[in-house]
Length: 500
Image 1 (cartoon, one colour):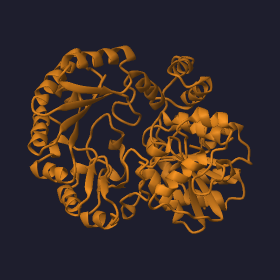
Image 2 (cartoon, one colour; image 1 turned 60 degrees about the vertical axis):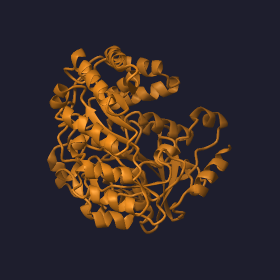
Image 3 (tube, helix red, strand yellow; image 1 turned 45 degrees about the vertical axis):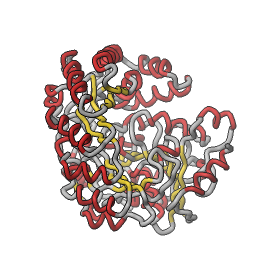
Image 4 (cartoon, helix red, strand yellow; image 1 turned 135 degrees about the vertical axis):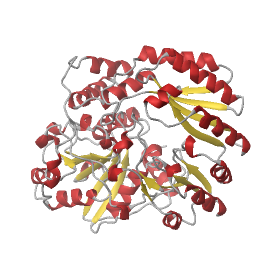
């Protein structure tokens, strides 16, 4: 299928797309393919927010599924809404979810005919800025490639940032003004000390889908957040640095009023959805209206008969929750307040309500973990699988900046692989085990703990072909030891005036 035909197919099947032309236009770029981008609630929210501004329009662009094929075609990357080359826009706004998408940002710029390095761009090139979930932990590997980084929740600050850019008489003037914003980093002018993350006013909640499409992982699911943030204290999670001092609740009536009549599938998305005090009522109301309901982040200690019954009525066939630690000792160490008894209860509830399977997420390679911890998970897995078919989704632990486990070393590719083999061997024939690659988790770790130098190493890896060996060679070439620097700017930055 040709590029225009593919875009036409996607647009034809979308419900809710905004087709707007305006004097001031922004290319809103997601550095992963369409199917991933359109499953991002944050990306869709910013798309709607920009298009709601008088005189402004946001046009979407995505990393192609086959980057090499697109590169060889020598076609410029274009936006969906106007088929206009991305390089023609005065502003490129990137939404970055996690560390490996630095590669996608570089590739997207290259396919657009824009030099990836900000230092190689001139005043005639667009202003490039980035925001998104990565800014809650460590976006510094982005610094060589962007003109500005918008920290935290951009529901409100996106207006100020864009208004500043379009009202400035030059690129230099715009960046100087943005550098005074309390939640924006301009790397060229301010170095590597990040400003504090922004928080959206509660009146702007919840975020919800603008577009429904069958061409995503979630297939025509309308997404909405019943809460934002998290009040729990798991030591590995960046959400404990969530804004507004924890979780913000959206009332049931508000959530239900925003669900479109034609939405047959609804996803309730958030870091702690089962901590919402009305979550069972919300699920039941959606199920009563004949809708299928999906729910993220099911906490084992919140599962009860009423909630699981509601989930089953909403179409759930697999009950998914998390152990996170491979043993009770590990769960206690990372302050994940989940007990074996609660996991057993989850299995029993799933069986009682006719679920086909229980799925547990966990991490291996946590600080202090031993083979005995893995063996404990083996025994628990076998016990749970005697109650209901069990799947384990396993990810190597990656320490994130601005968490209590910041700076903890990666366990090592060999050790993680050995632990995974031990786990698989112990539950063979009883439990389905699917694990994230230890190699790519190591790459994520290096970027999560890195800064500009690691970002530049990604560029070298992309130029070399993007294989794991290319990434390893680029990272191995970095200086063996560099001093760690504080990532949080002193609080007095908050008192600086914002210039418009």
